[in-house]
Amino acid sequence: MVSKLRHVIVILMTTIALMMMLSVLFSGNMIHANMTMNNQFTAYSLLKYLFLGMALLVIAALVTRLSHHHDKLVKRVLWAIIIGIVIFAMLVQPYAPVYDSMGVNVQVYDLVNHFPHGKWSNYFSIFPNNVPITTFLFWIDMPFRHFLTGLEDFLLLNAIYGQLLMLFSIYHMSKLADKMFGSPTRNVLLLFYVFVPTYLMQLTQIGYSDTFSLPFLVIGIRYVIELFYNLKNDNTQLLTWRRLGINDFKAIVLSSVCFAIALFLRPNTIVALLAIAMIIGVFFWRQWQLIIMILVALSLSHVVVKEAGSMTTNMTNYQVSHDKNLQMPIESWFLTAYYLDGRSGNEINAITDKYKKYDQRKAYIRSKLLGKFKDLGPIGILTTWRDKTNVLFGIKSDFGMQYFNQFRNHGDHTLQEQYQSNYKFLAPKMIHSTMTVTLLSILSFGILPFYFFAKNKTTDLNNDRADFKNNSFSILMILGVLESLSLFYILLWEVQEHYIYMMFPFLLLLGASLWRWAFQIVFQIGIVNTLPQNDTHTDEMRSKYESQ
Image (cartoon, rainbow, N blue to C red; front, side, top):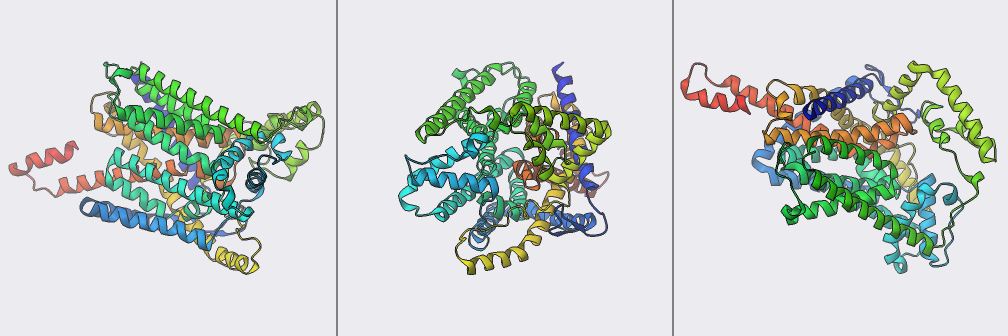
């Protein structure tokens, strides 16, 4: 029964990945250049991105070969480039928060600068979802209050925090890649990061909930995978707390604390945690005591973090609004998810702001939402899902470069002119580079059926060959996180181009791991085919390569 459920889950997840890949392949013009969705930049054609992707694959293959003999050198060079890009961004393109993220940073500045007499803006009573990130930034900015003289200092400090957390998450993701598939895969992953400048340079400088939640989610996933990695799926020996080693306790505590912080900052990460729980439950259901220990640790961590947040809001005089007319009904989020092809806009604002009374507003929004569903029909809803997938991953995305176009040092007009000049020169190149890696990673989904269901591999989901089996578990875990977060935006929420970054580390890891596996298979087949035929001396060598 369990083995059948495993195969059903693998088939379902593989099917979803393939559908996403097909959607992206038809997301723009194949031959001619495309305009990005906001008509701000010119994107390449699909064929040109494919050509660049093949060139990057050649470089990845070279990195793979070099890693067998010069692993430490390759790793150090790639890390030096990544860190160099981050420092370059802080100096040449110091992105500033915009819209909601700027409102959060301004609020933090006021709370810290005027503590304990700071006041919360009414905005946070209407949109309490931004209270946790404001609280978190208050925690990490408060120790430096005497060194921060103005808003620009706070923006710089939070940008430094964001960049350091991003580098920390890359470190943990590279450690996970090394654990799963070895140092060549880790170096391919680092290579992919080198070619995603919009991630290294742009979003992580913005002090907002996704910027700070994502690294903790990545770190938590790294430790929970390591905890289960060396366990056999069908091990009948239960791993109780008495049998846990120091590293096991460390993994349980760190994963639980990181998951709790990620959930506190970005509540929609609950969908990723549910996907993780489902996959662990299917693969390691016999280890129910270990699963209970993790759930207890996570629950305790969540309570502690949430209580710390409540204490902070009380200490800073946050007032929860009890005026029902200031609240937005849940239907408003579904309206945004479907009314304008999943994008926010003035037309939606006109609907949500038409009535001041909550009950009237809710009834009006619900009527507009139901009318929209009726107009769309099943085909229209499927088309909306396709279009939202393409906003996140399609070749006409600008990765939020049009959205984030403001820079720090607002008072220095000379610097602002230089930043804007740099922006106009760098932004198109950053988009092309990031899209090349994104498309290449999406195309790796085509490898999944061969990885899971190729000849001599099908039964490895059930038998005791721990190497392939544990790698399958890890791939499924990463794929589950990627798909759960993606489906949340596609099915339930609005989409913006920069929302891809919540899925980006997992997309890159899948791309690096699957392409590296493909390299290995091709290389082994090439070696076997070049061995002499009818030579008894090479029989053992041939059997060795064919069995790997």
